[in-house]
Length: 160
Image (cartoon, rainbow, N blue to C red; front, side):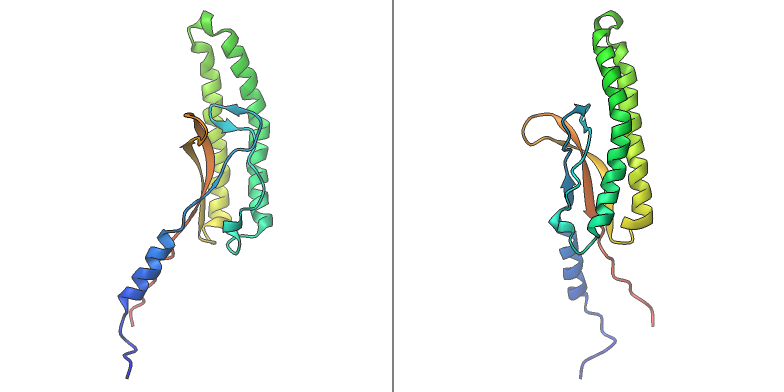
């Protein structure tokens, strides 16, 4: 006769390690302009690895919010970068500080959007979005990508 009170740890451990093996989804910048590794937009095409985890409409709404932040901030960053490059020799490089600060502010704004999205939707679905710096495949430069990680489901042991 089977023991109903027995805990089979092997099955739980196997399922737990399988969920850790899921690679995160990487969404690269798809724009035609990049300022300090941050592209001016991300592709809104739904990745097939998220099928069954999140609705395509929710995914597209998140990407649209991120692209709106980029659309508002990056043109200003480019103007400051152009002005900073023109004055770089006269200011010994100090004219590039506004661009660096604006770029940091843009990344912070995107992080805020992702934090709100994670707290209101994606953590409930077992997903976590974040902006991550990675090496480009084609050259030796760094770029910012959106990383969608899968949160492992930890089995809950309830006392009898």
